[in-house]
Amino acid sequence: MSTLLLMAAIVVGGWIFFRVLEKQPILPWKEKKHTNVQLNTNSKNNKTRKKKHEVEIEQEPNLFEELFSDVRDVTTHMIRFHDNSFTMIAEVDPVNYFLKNQDEQEAIDITVESWTATLNYPVGIYLQNRFIDVSEPIELMAKAMKESEDLNEAALSYGQAMIDDILAWQRDTPRYETKRYLIFTHKIKANDITADSEDELETKVMEKAFAELMRRLTSARNQLRKADITVNLVPTEGIYELLYYTFNRRKALKHRFKDLVEQEKNALYITAEQTDNRIDLVKEAIEQNEAEMARETATKKETA
Figure 1 (cartoon, rainbow, N blue to C red):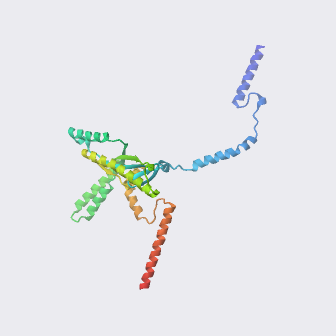
Figure 2 (cartoon, rainbow, N blue to C red):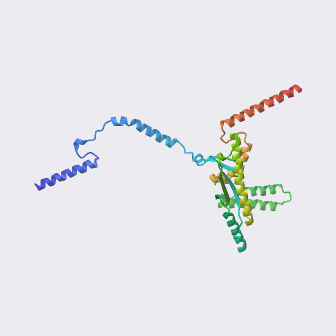
Figure 3 (cartoon, rainbow, N blue to C red):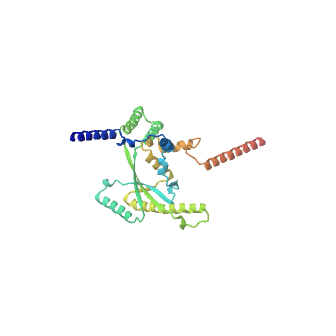
């Protein structure tokens, strides 16, 4: 009897193991019913899911636009945000602290500490590492060599060799320079300003923000001047250049920002994206100019 029970247990265990291995129900009367009805009913969901998945793959993320989603404009030497917050940037030319003696270092420390003690508003510090651009001094050297008339062949060959060595020095090992900036931010409450129109309100908001930020920058300039630290305002074009070097670190060495500005000035058509209103205004200005030129030619023919 025990032998039969053992054989039955082995058979049942083998059956359970086989059904589990085949991923089927253990009891045969509970077989899975493979019907096409469920597949057809879920076909719409599958299609919608597939479409959504395809859209997500094909759609390119607008990382740059999302990064500057809070920025409204860069104008009047300031970055303006949608919540009427304004940012003014100042470039700092530091002093070589470790070349000073102990008394001079203490004077610098006291000056900086006294300035920071007077701050009752946030001031940010931004450091930017750039590749050293030696194209400008090389252009000046080549221009001077070309325009000078009293240089002999030995001097010209020496100057050209020095230019080649500088280019090789820059090409072989990347060299960096650090730019230092102070960032001043101030938020204007438009509800506290009285104005008769939207244009007047915008003008007053801009003037108030510029006056406050310029006051903070001037205070930093006057106090840090005692420590031989120079603080200069970064203009609107300088802000664009700062952002250009931020997102085009390696490319900015070959495609310089000032070259892009010159190309844009001399371009026949504006390469940047323009709004429809601006395009309409430009077309209207062109039509007016053509009409004036036609009238001038007509008057010249009449007088002739």
